[in-house]
Image 1: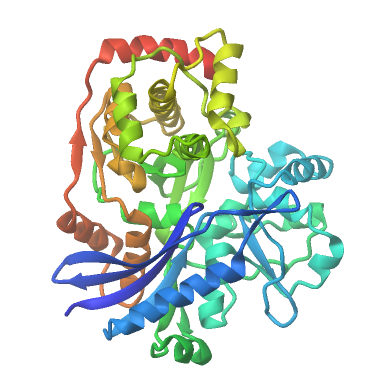
Image 2: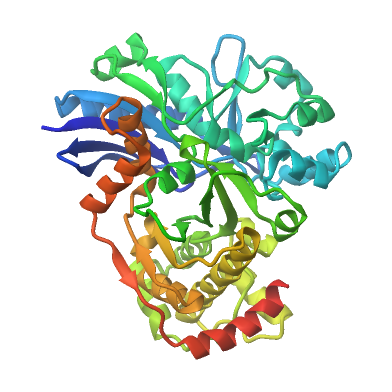
Length: 486
């Protein structure tokens, strides 16, 4: 029978309730429930339908109960930076904002007027992104914050809903740009500078903290016993990196999905002028390791383009887009994925065409050309990021592990190997849910260590290896690309 665990894995596009089974040194996953999570536009503003998402969680829990299996525990992981304000009764307050809402621009100006950017980076080690929690929270009306009992990040709010214990798990807390990774706590300096009261955000806990049993009323409603609720790694990238099937040597990871998060796992943060200038971030991983990484707009570029084409009556599966890209001419046009215009939704192909026009390149001629432009640009941006990472840590990277949904994209993965000129190992796909479950197993004593958990992943999933090809062509394209990102 093995031991069974539940993971609620929330992505910015879809969510899943997944059953994980650990048995004789191997782990298997079964998707019980899938649902859309995408933000909703209300009066021109982007919100998350938080109540609906909680109901989707309950629907998944009912399906788990119907399996009639002994389940040990549950935990939720989610995207970072977004939060839920809870009132004095511990109930969620509306709206729950989406990080892509335009209000963040005003938040950036507010923060800049109160504290200098080098101070923020020195306190947090987090790269500047207008969507970070620090820029969102200052846009909240003072009265709304005055009513708040506590603020929880999205994944932690789900754990609170399940357990009644309010804690912000450290991997998620570190995405806020309000956490100090040296002092390992909320930044008192930033809270004071921004006029945020201490205690506004719920206390921080370590990855793998046992919060307690599921609330009796919730357990009764969904038909489960009061199973243990664990704060595993509440940030999906933290969970994904926890499951990377790597050990020894010098390796980097790429969590490939809506966002591409590329970096290395270190014992201590790298907070200096060079890291700040290059836009690197120091997020916390399992065991208080540091994920020195770069946030890159990833498959969002494909997802938004696909949505636009579907509205025009040209609906295609991702496999068809990949096929058309592979057939298109190479290196016709390139974009800088880090350009701010690509952060917002709507008509992504138009934005790509505008960038190409402004930089004296041909506009992509058709869908295949547009997708190939995205693939090649992402691969070349990964190359730039890897070289910068190597300079920051003073060490050569020998291989790259790609995990997450993008690990299935063979064309992009091959392009990445070509651009980086090192082997790329792709898989597993559901790495966030996998890491979530493995950290639960460690917390409950079912796995003895993080190293043992990574061995379980290697024993359970087949990886695909991509070896570099066409190095001269990619070297030439890299010269062109670097002029776009310098």
